[in-house]
Structure formats: C-alpha cells, structure tokens
Image (cartoon, rainbow, N blue to C red; front, side, top):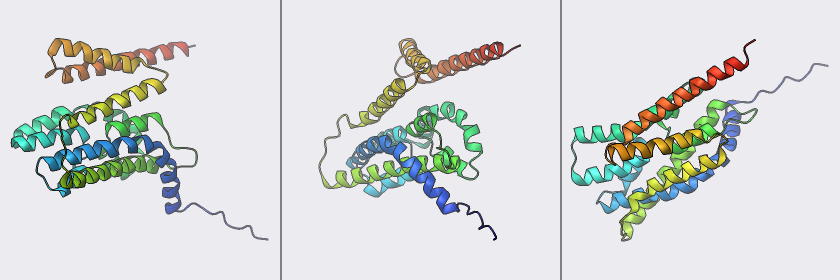
Length: 247
C-alpha cells in the first residue's frame, strides 16, 4: 500500500498561523494607538486640515511623535530645511534601536523593507519582548505585528479626524498624549524585564543630560551617552562570559 503524501503547509496557511500568533501580542498597542491616533486626528483637523490628510500621514509618514510635531510646523508655515532638521532630530532614536533589528530582519526576505519602515517605539518593544512560537514563520510573525500596529494607528487617526471635523474640541494639552504613551511603554518594560539596568541607564542618562544641556539640547547627548554605556556594558558582559567558559 502506497503511503499518502505528506501535506505541506501552503503560503496562506503560514500567513494565517503567523497572524493568529501575532494578533494577541499587539492588543496592548491597539488600546494605546487607537486613542493616541484619535488625538492626532483631532489635532490635525482642528488646525484646519481635511480628515483625509490624517490617514495619508499615518500611512506614509507613520511616525507618531513626528506627526504631532508636523501639525505645529504646518500651522507655523515651516520651510523644508526646518522640517528636515526637525524630522532628523525627532526620529534619530530610530537609528539606535533599529540597529539591533538588522540581524533579525535579514532572514525576512523582501518583508524586511516594510519591517524597517514600520519600526516604531511600540513595535520595537513588542519585537524585543517576543519571538515567534514553534511552528510559526518568524518573518511573517514580525511582519504581522508591524502591520497590525500600523493599522491600529491609521484607524485611530481616521476616527479622530472624522470626530474632529464634526465636533468642537478643546485641543489644549492633547499633544501630551504621545509622551504619556512613551511613559507607559517604559513602565511596562521596566516591570516585565529581569534586567532593569538598561532602563536605569536610560533614565539616569537622560536626567543628567537634561541638567547639563537643558530641555532644548539634551536629546542627542543623552542618546549618545546611553549607546556608549550600553555598548561598554555589553562588551564587558561578553568578555566575562568568555572568561567563564575558558578552559
């Protein structure tokens, strides 16, 4: 009797399994992005822009804090050089936390292009704290985490823009919503991770640079200090590990 051929999982099955595994992990981001996206949409339409622009910006720019800053620059009539410099300053942090993802994204094939473009603070936090379950393709798992997070942001922006165009809103303090989300992400990582040293370095380094350089100039020195300290400690940890395993 001839044995039946072994069935292999088709591409749609691989994607479905990855989507089912990724979706529960993104629920905390769903709760945050819906409300923060709505705040952005309300802020943009309150500045006189059509609700469609909120969706366009969330699809093609997809940089939460920079989108909030963009509203102010549009209102002030900022020129291209100012916008470029501000974008570089606000989004420079992507360089620091994007580098550790290079090896992970390298195995994702063509999907790595979108994974790099869609890497936000919250998506980075999820990817650092989770891995694809057994039997789930890692590339598609990372892809769907990134895609779902952006869908939540686009949906929140659209809802806020429509609401802002139909109802009157007092937008005083609404731009603080993104800062509040960063604080929540930081606290969540601090509570879940066993090694809290990186969080302590980030907090202490930022506070020290804030005192030295002031609120307008502390960001770049703080990032540089954190990278130097983390690289130094990582090198020490690797060296200590090598000494422990030496004959």
